[in-house]
Image 1 (cartoon, helix red, strand yellow):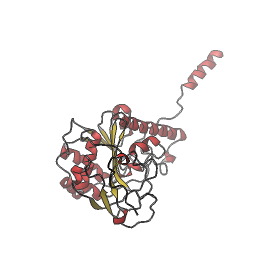
Image 2: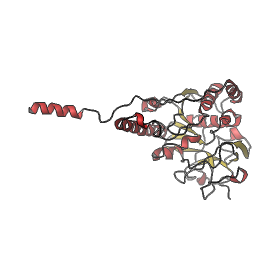
Image 3: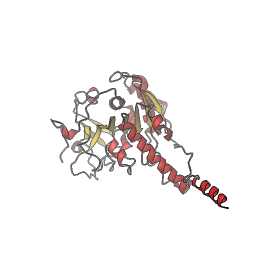
Image 4: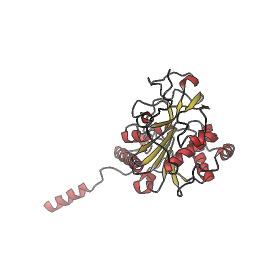
Length: 326
C-alpha cells in the first residue's frame, strides 16, 4: 500500500501546472494595392546612408493585442523594399512569437516593432479571452513576460531595436520594456487628419543630418502622440525631432505641463541601440521619401552600421532648442 501511494505522489508532481497553447497571431489585413506598391518603389532610397559592416538581418514584427493600424501592411512592404533597394539589410517579416526565443532572436541584427499594441505576444484580451481556459491563459501570460524579457535582454546585450509609432502603446505593465522603448503613449491629441509642424531639434545628429540636411522643420498630415511623464525623460533620451504645438493644428487634450512633444529619439540601453519615431500612423507616411530615409537612418543605427551619439539631450554641453513654450 505504501508503495502504491508513493507512485501516485511521484506521478502527481510531474503533472504540468499550466497547459501549453499552440496559438499563433493571425490578422485579416487589407491587401496593399498595386498602385500603392508602385508609389513605395518609387519613393524608397536606392543607396544606404552608410555601407553596412556586414550582411544585416532585420526582423519586422507587427502583432497587435489591441488596436490594429490599417497601415501595417503598407509598412511591411515599405520596410522590405527599403532593405532590398539599398542593400542595407535583409528583412524577415513575421509575427511568430517563436522568433523572440533567445537563441532565434540572437540571429537578427535588429528588431523593428511596426505598430504593435498592448501585450503583443498575447491574444486580444477583449475579443479572444473566452477561447482559452484559465490554465491556457496563464501559460500565455507567462510566455509573454518571458519573451518581453528576452527582447530587453537582447538589446541590453548589444542588439538593435527600432520602434515605429505605437511601439510605445504596448507592454504597459513591463517597466523594462518602457525603459527600453523610452516612453509610454498618453493619447494622441493630433489626429490622423491634422496638420503638424515637426521641428528638427538635433540637425547635426548622425541619424538626422543625412536625412533632413539643413531643414529646420517640415509639415505632415499625421497622428502624433504625447507621452506619459514616466519613463519619458530628456535626462535619458537624445531627442531628434519634436512637434511644435504653436504651428500645428490647434487641439484639445494636451496634458504635459512642460509642453514637450517629442517625435523621435535614440538611446543606448546596455550595449544595445534603440531608435524610436512616432511617425507611422497614416498609410501615406510609408510612401514619403523623407520619412523612408528617416526609417533607414534609424535601422542602420539600430544595426550598428551608423554610429551616432546617444548622450541625453539634457546633458549636452550646448542644449538643443528644447521644448516649445506655450
